[in-house]
Image (cartoon, rainbow, N blue to C red; front, side, top):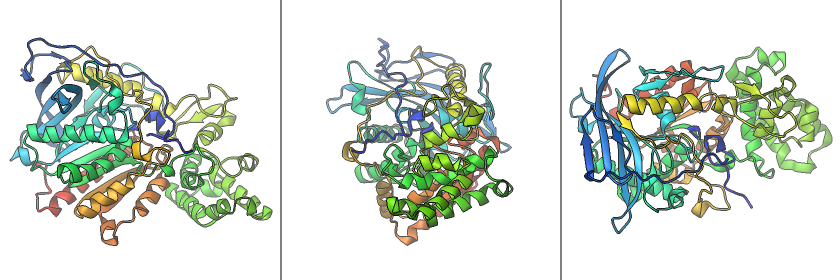
Length: 535
């Protein structure tokens, strides 16, 4: 029986996976309901900019502040709102309070019709802080690319923010960030594929209604499992709420979970799709033969893809019918492209899981590599174990993101809460509903959404060193959506020499920001709207 234990991040994990549970959910810290009622609070309170507030899960309280950020040399004035939006059941009883932070540009014309993007990370169980303070928002964290980040931390003005192009709303699903169920409501009612979609869709509907944004061009931006959520939402919003979208931005995408599942050895597909990223990691750590090391990264990745499609796939398909001499040749080529010893590959029956690869590539140096970014390394805590005990590419940055947001919320947004801001939390068991005992595939929903709305434009960002949602798995998914040929041009893939959270890498942040601005401009021009939205 195939278990649906391959959830992602966003981080990322985000990240996308506790974020670290893109493939294997790990128990982090359990979400606990918060209850801090304010006796005299009205249903919706807007506090003066100088006042601080305490989180109240029963009332829709917001803190509004005004700021200016310089993006690409242009001053952008904006209003920031930190709020807790209520969700109720059919009886009108409070069920949950969803925390969000929104940014609205104020020095432009017709601000209520400006494009708006609803953003979230993945996990499931990840808060939106990764996209918020790593890529899109007006402030971003400062991280180290080659070592763990420890205090003192800092966050700075984000000159690469997308706020000059679109207004932004960052959503923390129930049990993440400051979002909680209310009273005695069980958080498990939100912990599932369909439950999550309905909750986030209801948030989007309420926000658009309360803020007069139904006429605005709309985007969804998700990372990791957040891309799964975005694809499912695109279909749900159209079919159930009759809300049509202009675009989707999918960062470190996973739609078809069969492409990343390594827990079932009978699923040969994933071994093919991971190989090019193994090659990229081995190239970076200089574990490939000299002739490959001298080539450009993208050249060696392409060579690995070609082998995976033309030879490796046939070898796995033949199983024990593969002739001994051909098997020897395949093992040798796998060693050539992965940096692993041929004897080890033979012992693994030509099938090396991602967790094994993470452990084995630098084993002789006493190190493990990161899953979210295979360029990063850490000390192997237990050389005798079969898999790594931690992910240096996650543990190296989660502290700075958590600290930065806690400080930013109180200092800049004037939102004060004694509740824990849950950057990553345990939402398992996650209810896969109709996809239980089979692989979840949100690609079907994306195909439906794009077919019914042939103007929907999709941008997909792929990290070349990402072992959580590997490049070739993403390319395979989008080439197997079954779209009408006329719609293939609506999907654009961007490639970045970085990991799952490619925005933690400065050159990739710059490139991704430029690509997103170009993408938004293209979508707006398609609808006859001005593409130069920096004025």
